[in-house]
Length: 226
Image (cartoon, rainbow, N blue to C red; front, top):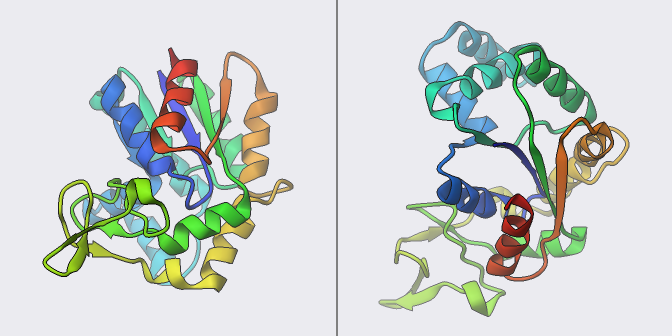
């Protein structure tokens, strides 16, 4: 079972991806990790990507997509994978679809976590990241996942680890920039989601409301995955 997962920053897609990974025993692959692995491993593609990154430029799709395909063809992906963080726009969606088909790989599901933009922004500004595991949900605005107090400071409600904030989580301009890309339904990430909705060919798109609790969102996804 091969899955793409979409959701705006703040939607909990990383958390849901980790839950799907655990249930089905498939790797949860994040595009950023693929870049780091290739650069640290000094692969040919990693060297090419690093040149663009060092200049502050975006890495072209003809480098990014082969990196992703290489990862999806590794042994631990033989029983399936869940890809998070790519594609980010319609052109990338089209290119990824073609590359998967050329490689003889099927895409089975697309999971879309739907969240209004204002709610997504509130979730970002209030979230706290566990230093032990970023997928441990902690949020100062929601009682169900509020951090706990220990020795006079707030710590992770799951493991008791220290908490931190991402600097760009507290930066309105940075948040708006990320959401501008995601919610753009002409060329951005929403356009990529819509591409897969219209694709057909055996790809099932699962759209779930991201506003309820983590458990309720998980239940909605699992109901569709079977």
